[in-house]
Length: 156
Ligand SMILES: [Zn+2]
Image 1: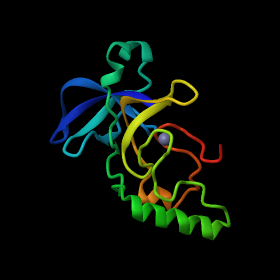
Image 2: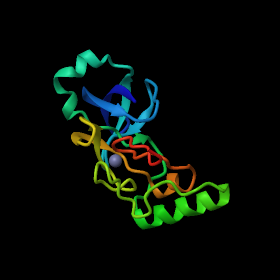
Image 3: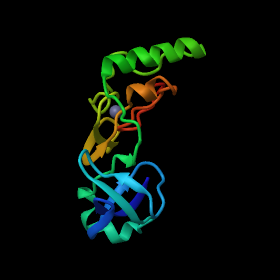
């Protein structure tokens, strides 16, 4: 995960001040990115030091991704089916919970949620940071063994 600065684009020109975001995929200065559902921006800085954002890091949001990233679909049922197919095709046991619900952080692995971390042996706390769930597309392409929100390994 990268911390980046982005300027919003008005038409084709960057406008206003630079805002700080997380990016889940690597981007470079000059890349155009989809900031949220309605706004497009251009990356003006990458690898912003964590210390610089420390005072407001809980409020940082993640950009959607590079511009023209195909939209990902979130659908728990379709994703479970996609993962089942993947497991069958690759001859591996289905590790992810069939219902999609992570028993540890109590969120659906196939839907967007909140980053969660283990604060004691049994207690998991959800943070305010957004966490992308596993899309239908990803569920059809990779073997899922961990919760995307809390990192719980389903084999444990
Ligand atoms: Zn979890």
